[in-house]
Length: 298
Picture 1 (tube, rainbow, N blue to C red):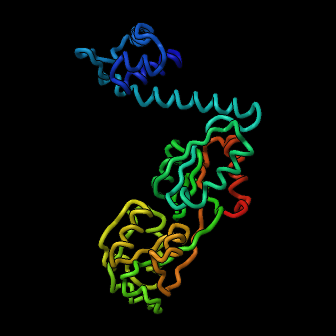
Picture 2 (spheres, rainbow, N blue to C red):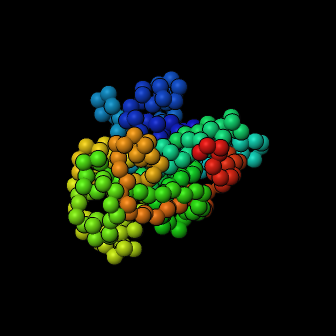
Picture 3 (cartoon, one colour):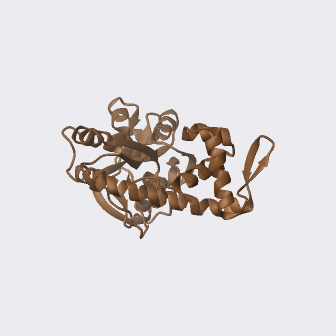
């Protein structure tokens, strides 16, 4: 059994089609078919059923699939380690960032990194805090930067920055007059929330609990999956929201949103790394950039 045979098996299993697998691997169809046949013959087992023009895994093939994938991942990690030991930062660095971080905090730092280490290809994914942590745990991302608390023993969590949450309403809201609010006033309006798993949502709920208010006691009108969607809903209606000051700063300056007199806490940004995976030179270089503090004007 060779690594090439395993790669071909995996491609055919994922595509469920020999021709598409061959195109993906840049091989001929006959080469792909021969590799699968050799693997089956070597171990005297059927891995695929041929059904019409398609192909599907047998029960044995389904059982073998995760093992083949794990071996290939280990081989790729070994190759990556050897390449990393040989010189300056290079290769691909995958980063998963939560929405606020990706939109308002991370870009200027990515530019600093890019100027220092041009050989490294940066692959950026965006989701909420929970999705970012899951990506690092699953090995889909090398690093993550999030604004929410993460409880995962397998992850190393390092504070790299901070942000301020603010309460905002639209111009038609009765709180837009700027009067001071008491914690109990929060129960008297409708709310536009980010989705569960969002660090912004978690920050609001933590502050509510600190104030002695159950998050479930708020009148939630909508839950939306992005800062931009929440801002649009607040501007158009009479609901309130808590968001990053970075996300609403321009809207406040334009008078499209109003910030009532109600203090909200700062919150940290965290860098997530997997404790058990090799830290490449590219990763270490990014950790150094993120730990330097804000670039000029950021």
